[in-house]
Image (cartoon, rainbow, N blue to C red; front, top):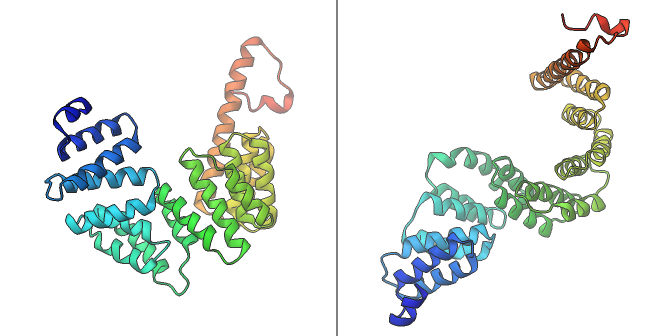
Length: 305
């Protein structure tokens, strides 16, 4: 393509073809350059809408929100689509809630209705919160957009507690994208070490990077700061299980069931844990019994028959 273009000149079609090739090999910088050139070369080009969507996708993938927003606006003016309006709404919501809601409402597609139903009260409330927007997006696994919202929340927060939470949730969003979240969670803990949610998210981050013992310590701190939350005790039970302390794991899972008044979700966690423990014990006995090992009397009644 490059050789042909140098010989006979570039056309919008050849520039778009080159952009596609660069995109396939992962060179998003060259891909975006060639799409931009194609769009500026021929304002009447029939492939403009397709090229604009491809260019928008590249900018979204690179989290270049300003450029993505600009090209999406052009795309939505030239070839309106639910996808384009949805992307505009997600980008705009943490910065300009009114515009964000307007774009999301224009994304008239049943796929987006549940998210819109959750976002609408937040976007129309008296105190619009980029942090709350980010949490909703995180729960819908819209991770880059959630990180964008948490970044805005951290930049615009008027108190250290909100800033800390924005960094802590941002760390989780980054972890789930395969990005490093350590600096984000460190800033969160430095700002608000006594916020139970910050310490809880610290525990999840440390578990994500494989530091189970440090994760346990963070979750112990979180549970101590909010001792009436059964979800924290359930998470604490999981943390003890991961470090091999099964007695403590069962203790805190039972506490989660008690605090939640036998909430089925926590009962299921405890039941699953106990079932796994019985299976592990049975497997252990199956390994040692053929060796004619004499079991202590307290264990004999639990041996498989």
